[in-house]
Length: 380
Image (cartoon, rainbow, N blue to C red):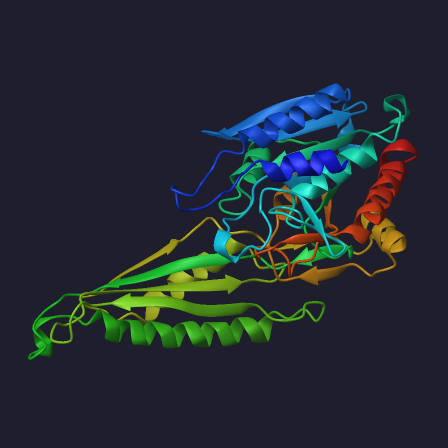
């Protein structure tokens, strides 16, 4: 198992919106495919884009798997890293002070090695329901790998565990993520005479007021005490307008971040955003454009009564909770799969220099995954 972790960490697979930093995950996919083929899994490599792919490997009879079966899922990409801030080699698994250091140890290549280790402790003939090992691409950027699964209607299973860093605590809910651009185009002119133009910065001032009123309304209407921040949030994160003090501002653009609760569909929020801002925009001389900065991640909620949730709570001793960060869970949920987020890493380690996984989490994670496989695949 340690040799698998070493090899996974050793292969760079950064995904980034900057094309100069973005890398293929194909070498990681091919490595996983070789291992899983040798272990008598049925392996599919599912192309996503140029140099990007998902891997789906299975044991057990797949027919009728929508009524049973378990997916152990993880993404094969990592975020970029600041090499000068690392004291350990990010591409060499190294042990120090009871921890395993390396890029992807906590978030989350190491989980795939642990899942394979747990799966191979059972005889392939013992599986009554199928087990899937799923590795995806571009989770850290576009979610293209997860979206491709939805388009392909794969996998077909009843339950899934995504091994994102949760400190071994089951997570059944998370907020969604929207990042939207609001652009107002007016008309530039000489600042000595306001009548010569239409000031987009002044129009944006009105728009920002409406956004804050909308935020208050959303927070009064939607509340969930199971989240640390129990209301949806809206952050005004970036603004740019105009080019010189003595020119009327001809265009202004604002970027906002919205974190909706479960039950708040992204497209409905986008429609409300545009409708509300269009109503308050001054009538003449201004054009409003609202566009997503990326497709967004829906919120996720798996019912507390799910057999998977209840099994995980019993096995970990923790009540299933919520987190603020997004995962691939809502995409698996779209496939009809009851999904839980549960992994050995800690979110405080994710995207940080000297990312590590605690050694004392490794065997408990393997044992937990073996119990889940036994419950849902061996003796359902």
